Length: 359
Image (cartoon, rainbow, N blue to C red; front, top):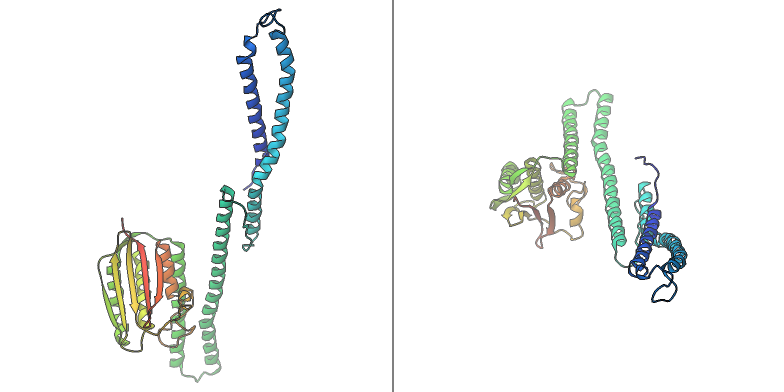
């Protein structure tokens, strides 16, 4: 926004220093007058009959006082200018770094040396902000590239199927329709997942009281046919755990966790355990499942978009779009909670969600 030109902070500080020195000098002269010169008799005999008298002292002292005041003023301006420049030098570095970041270069860091003070604290906070911003921008760019790739795949398949049908009119239309329906369904699921992820990241939702235990029961009831088809035992227990947030988003969060625990499980005879707990300051949801052993270095990547279990691609009917745990992380973060993923020694994963408890 345009602003009218004004005095620099350095000049203002220099003038302030000079003003304080001038005031201090004037105060000192006033003290000298009030407690010394005023007691000198103003007559021809002077003090105790000895010259000089007040008239001579005043006329002798006044020029020297004026010179001292002028010296204080000039010294205050010059000294204040140098001192202000030295004091504001860190602020100049921070300003230059902010301008550099404004041009799109987020990799620059100030890394100001010296002992801790207000400017160093501001510099460290600015470096931390740039680091988080750079990470966020890189994540968004990576997400956009992955989303474009994932969306392009079903569209390319649809075009290929239509081209084949156009060139071969005798081809079975029923098979074509089924394949187009499957590809279109996948594209719709991916688009809805992207919209849900964007909604969770923005945090724009109406908050209400939500009981995680009821949400877990609803999600388990919805996904029970999937668990039975895969011969997975689904166990839901625990007491009421109330939090404040969007009931729709929190239900989607639990649905994603339970579905992920069912799909990424043993081929048969696996289990999924869902527990809810209420603590003084947090409502806790735990989803634990059996399955293959997970490497510790793989677990942090599971919440990244478009990561599907231990592989990039799945071939079964629940291939998904690789956004399940990414959506969970986004929803948890939007509700001010924490998400913790720990691989089980016997195989499978333990997911713990902690959300702020209702006051």
